[in-house]
Image (cartoon, rainbow, N blue to C red; front, top):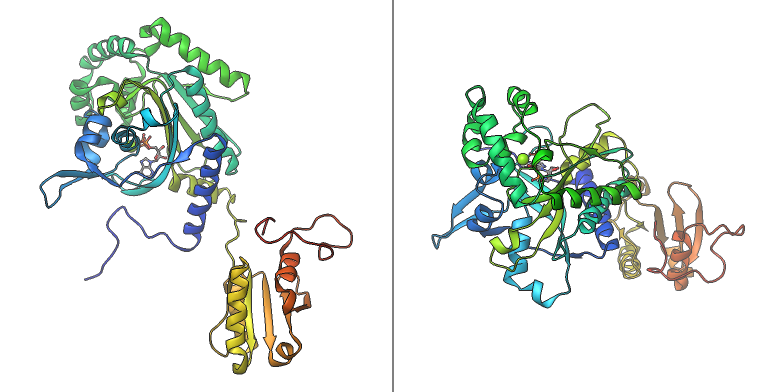
Length: 446
Ligand code: ATP
Ligand code: MG
């Protein structure tokens, strides 16, 4: 039996693991700039959280969920998306009552959807996202869009395309749904099987059908604009005017409705061009939601949020060579010269780690050549070379492996010597080894 990973899942290691960690850290830092705090909801939820939350007419609930009965015969689902679970957590923990509103939460982790695996589409994939709950305003909607764009720019994307639309309040949507029902009823015979079901469940879902011939029919469908209430119209234009004021480019896409049932008012998607012309679909999708908190048993609070697909972001950044420089090597490779200094080298390595430097030592006697090879494979910046002669004098050789420069350092001053070697150049002509370098942890390391 050949144990391959489950179809649509893959093992993340090496460069991809570095990249995903880097992407997550930049996006989390961006969310923290906007005063968001992390929430870590469980992967498993009772199925109802999604069937009621994400919505019975969504493709996710209709076709894509990993749902099973646990040993206690309860139906549970591995989250296909985070919003419903985050809102469930807010309600379960009464965060709306104990924390200041709006609650501002960000999350990161795997989501599971039973979809056909293809470019940029997996059955287990990672999402980063945010939810701001408890402030119902066009400004909150605008801030959410701006934060999503900001996070992606911080990652290095040069050109992003923001598509935005409004699907209005409940009254606007029910008038629009009625208009769509009569339009699509006249065309449904020519449309895919899925759309037959969508027509009876929620004709809005037909608008994001991806079948080409259905897309042609969608083009002729009525537009939301004609059915918007005055309040929804005003709210949307307030959001847009904030984007205008901040110089955020967007395109109003009047067939954008997003595939999840809880959205109302503003919805948006962000796309990025692929350097190789591939189509990865959206890298971010989000919008405002009105009834979700109440639907899941909480008070009548609105929210706004987005979710990003980390694998799609990674693929696009990698294609554009925007992740080539993320360093993943260690700081130091400690090289014992001869078996008799193995123990001292071991201790020295521990000492360096206690000072906050990542390092490795071979734990066995090796010749210099193989040690330099190992140091290179680990991406070490410096080699710290110690032999018996050096130890007797209380010194070691610190070799910059890129610049090939070597210098003797006093082991009694190890912390100071390493901080000086790793300190960023401060512009002082005499270099930065002199004086009193800031201790490790207070300086940028790399
Ligand atoms: P799509 O239209 O591509 O199916 P979606 O509307 O179903 O996307 P959302 O539910 O909005 O996606 O999820 C947010 C983001 O998560 C998407 O913009 C995309 O980047 C990513 N994503 C969604 N499904 C997958 C998947 N199966 N594999 C990888 N990434 C995904
Ligand atoms: Mg989808």
